[in-house]
Image (cartoon, rainbow, N blue to C red):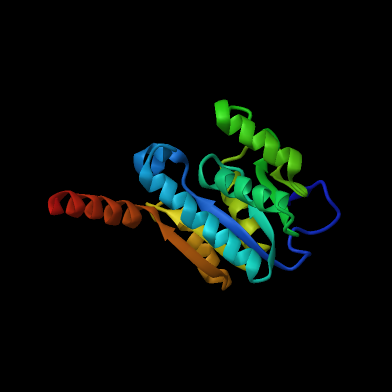
Length: 193
């Protein structure tokens, strides 16, 4: 059973979006901010979040994993700082989640936890199932899933399939396809010169 430090359920205001995606090491170029593919991927993710906000989605749930979840949480916080009436829900798989994060991941996680409108601890302690339970918690309280995926044989792929079964609207950003398309485009441009 989810442990919640708030009296209001996560999906109580307006339509709700949740995020799923790989950790940096499973993304093109190891998720490096210096990668053109990653910068493009982040731009697509940001545009999707803005489109959701402009189409009546007001609550956004991040699962707080390194990579896509933290990026999405930061993007929602940026839109909130611009004055958009959005809610950010931080759904941690367990209470000590993030204690091993380092560097910018630790900073971003702390900032999200500080500024989130609600923090939910899906499990008190780490268990083998806590990540899956966190993903289920987010999907079951959402109307839409935005997923960044390279490998469908992953927790993100599992979350996409669960969201399909639950009837959510799903936007998939295929990181592997984006990488292949961009690399092919770069090669063709080089041949044109």
